[in-house]
Amino acid sequence: MYTQALDTHGKEPVPPVAGEADSHAARFQARIDEEEKIEPKDWMPEAYRQTLIRQISQHAHSEIVGMLPEGNWITRAPTLKRKAVLIAKVQDEGGHGMYLYSAAETLGISRAEMLEQLLSGAAKYSSIFNYPTLTWADIGAIGWLVDGAAIMNQIPLCRCSFGPYSRAMIRICKEESFHQRQGFDIMIKLCQGRAEQKAMAQDALNRWWWPSLMMFGPPDADSVHSAQSALWKIKILSNDELRQRFVDQTVPQADYLGIKMPDPLLKWNEQRGHYDFGPIDWEEFHNVIKGNGPCNRDRLRTRVQAREDGAWVREAALAYAEKRAAKAMKEAA
Ligand code: FAQ
Image 1 (cartoon, rainbow, N blue to C red):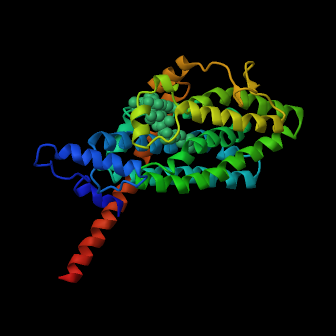
Image 2 (cartoon, protein in one colour):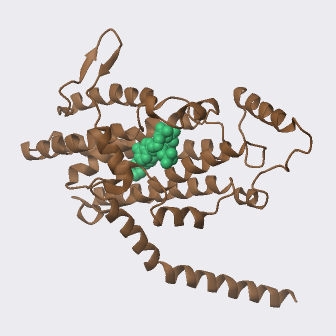
Image 3 (cartoon, rainbow, N blue to C red):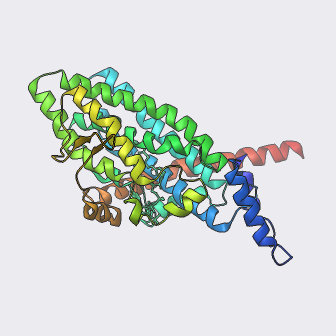
């Protein structure tokens, strides 16, 4: 069980002999260089553990908060089939959050602590989920672009050095591939529909394109954690490399749909073999992650309300578990 690591936090006792810490660290790095997976009870530097707790919990929070923009359209999906598919997708995101909280728990933090960090506003989650879903086309754009960016970022994470995170990522990526296809399918239908429907798809692309590029994080030159995370093989590709791959992959898809990226500087660069694209508004990005995006307050309020509304369920489940345990004790006596 993942949570068994909670009893030791996976830490070995402080090395008694001078120099032993260095040899632990050297052995640890050698294992990473050999592409060996690090498992929860293995020795690991405290900073490695903290980096993973930070990244995995932020990722888990993103999945949970990420249920809200699309959840907003479940009651308004245009057909029964679209509604069923959307419900399944939103449930999948909840499941991804659960796998990721479990993976983080193996590092010695409890789920309750992580949730507290989210609900108090202390923890980050992906900037993208602080934008509103104004029309049905936004549901198509999220599946196509947001899941597309998430997969681009997460496929390399399937090979990351920490075992539980890499294994969670394999399953999550499989499910997100389906999510991306359903989003693209919505976009195809809208783009093959009436002029108003195609205009709706274009409008959604206009609003989601730049925030999707921000999902990959700040430029490499400004990325605080990249260098160390690359050494530890938590990050296999850099923020900018992934962003470029995403642009290169997505532009032909927009061409297929017959809609245009809202970027006048977007142009194929024969020499580089990549698309050049215009400058990203990093001020907007920093503003959103500071809590001042269009929906930050609303998202947190909704999560806090959900916790309050669910209190009676947790209390009832706990009371039932206690009652069963007491009954089992009595029967065993
Ligand atoms: N939003 O030094 P770096 C999804 C923060 S899941 C908010 O480059 P790092 C599924 C960063 O945390 C989407 N904050 O950081 C879905 C750090 O702050 P800190 C989530 C951001 O960690 C689809 C600071 O900036 N995916 O979409 C963002 O090395 C549809 C400095 O940045 C993951 O979490 C941002 N966009 O690289 C659900 C993937 N970018 O902690 C529903 C796993 C950066 O020092 C519907 N995470 N920051 O206070 C990662 O791969 C990495 O954490 C990065 C950032 C690449 C996101």
